Length: 264
Image 1 (cartoon, rainbow, N blue to C red):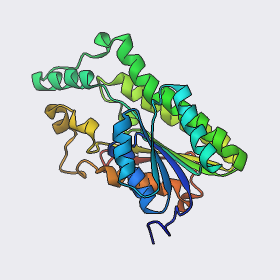
Image 2: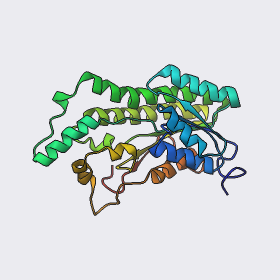
Image 3: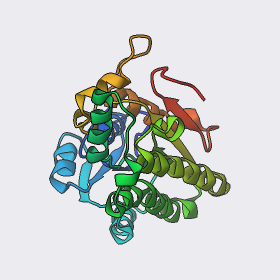
Image 4: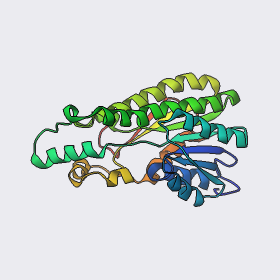
């Protein structure tokens, strides 16, 4: 049973980052549909508000996960209102459209990509600040909220790029690999306080980020021998499973969800 009066998250308080679109929005919908009261957060405040308006018992907050004070304020607001926080799904992240264009240009010209030597400090820091620093800020705030109650589940959204480390995308691969290792380390610490931390690592997924991927690069990800691009809902189902009691014995897991493109 799902909805307002039932579901496996009935009575639970959940916070979702990156909930304005894509995987984060799909997670917010899944959690709300299974009974959770959801705080939808996003750097794009109106997008977070649009998601929350779709859902019963939902609220929106504008949060830049790269800014620790904003993250802390959001978590403090949830705990102030409800006295607890039960579920966190951290789906906020960024890519680098310029680097993608450079990779696509190389593919079309049938030459090796040359990205690292052209990659500026600002582009490197932006990806790291959101994808890696942001994951730390969210995990730290989640433990501060959950550990005193000795209960809670946190799911971070990583990437298959952490494993296959595509040529020409070093900053993104590094940020996601770092986020995976960070989540696994925190998971070992957090479980002593009753808090579970796990990660889902999607492959190509039909999100706004994917929509900005150049056609040549999208074609490179296509392969008739594997599943097509995942939907945000398919990845959300994995994240919600990890946050549920059905995954009670999963701690520090990184679930690869790339449709069979490779295994590790």
